Amino acid sequence: MRRRLSAARRDPLSGLWTRAPFERRAARVLARRPHTGVILADLDGFKALNDTFGHAAGDAAIRASAASLTDALSKIPGALAARLGGDEFAAVIPLPDPVALPWLLRSLHDAITAPFRHAGRDLTVGVSIGAALSNDLAPAVGGSGDVLGVLLRLADEAMYAAKRTGGGWHYPAAGAPAAGTTAGRRTGRPGTHTTQRKDAA
Image 1 (tube, rainbow, N blue to C red):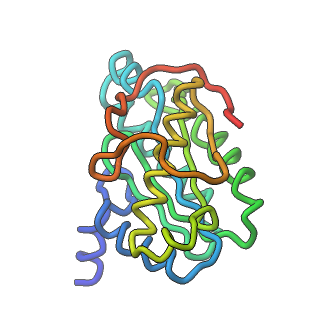
Image 2: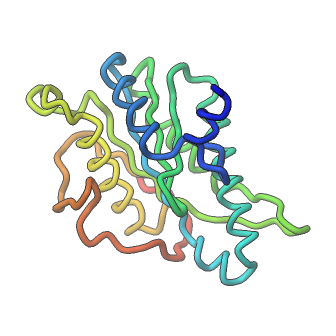
């Protein structure tokens, strides 16, 4: 029964947590760990991959990206990853030291954009990754009870900034969301589009 309940909370394609169980667990991690990064990742070129090689290739890209995310976080106690839907992923990562976050983002970007094998071909996708750190929140915001929601909005803004520069990763250190949000997401955020891969510092 426990295995069935756990499977029901997992995305069947990626094996990652779905949104609701991820958010419950992430909120607990944020309440207990002083230095926690929240990451949003959106694949670039995913539609072009589907259009060119078929939906099976798109599914393979989702599985490969999820495997890269899982592998990157496997040695970090308390880290959680989820597929929020489509080609978008999220993670909550307790860190021993905040200075480790840029290094982690760089390694995660490199892992997701590495070639994966499908139907005898080496295929690739790009990715835009945005991050926020719990240390960046002002005390008043941190005590509001919606820490995860605020950090997800900040990570979404950072992810959009990375996407505007052609993909890569972006961590803006500190600040507030730069645009209005709807259901925790930036209002008017465009869909995934094909981009050239490029690190955004």
